[in-house]
Length: 153
Image (tube, rainbow, N blue to C red; front, side, top):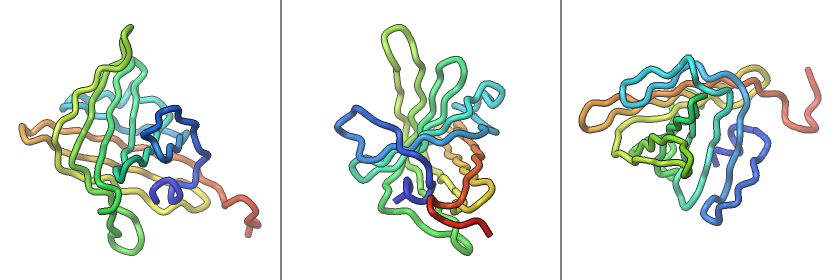
């Protein structure tokens, strides 16, 4: 499961549809929504949700824009040695406003790659393109530590 691989503290979620939600703190190094570079305003949190067989990685910007990369969680693959790859078939850009969050789901083809957590930094990189050629991308780096109860070398 993605959440277990990311080894982060659970985030409480009130939605009955969410099975697992994990909030990661760190540094967002890239955020592109429909070709618009929002990297300078990307927040230092990333949420990984797993619900109804789908997995998503959710990025946010300081001005209330959001971007979710979503794919079938059962289709997760391994690349090279052990880094997981999550195929993406949907991007969900959104914007927070006075009436809540307005989202506009769009079909897309791409993937999120993330390194297996270990002491040091864990990276998550997502990139997808819509059929009309718009680019969606997000990169996030978080510090991870040894599992609870593990002894330091």
